[in-house]
Length: 116
Image 1 (cartoon, rainbow, N blue to C red):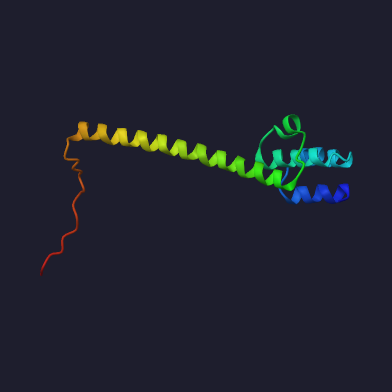
Image 2 (cartoon, rainbow, N blue to C red; image 1 turned 90 degrees about the vertical axis):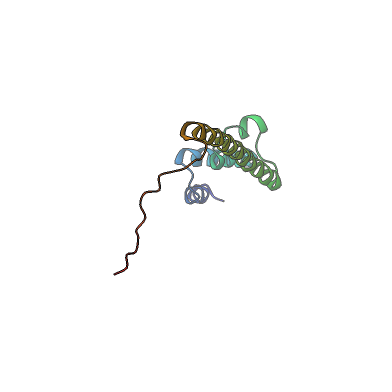
């Protein structure tokens, strides 16, 4: 792609102007793998592609890294949910001790139909 076309494409994909400019610059210097890694970082909010990996060398590598990225996020969310659920269970047990073992609640008065 020509630089202007690449810049327009990256903009349509939602990248910030600064990220787009840096990617276009690397691509114009024929550092396509680094540019691809920079795109990965911009899309995933990471900062390790160019410095640690030297860019992405194959489309399957991009796919694998992206899948791992989202798996890690999913795993962290599951751990956080489990921690919240565990805390909720402890709170419920504490409520039973505080409010009595029956767990009765005030449900208010329900409307009653009256016969005429």
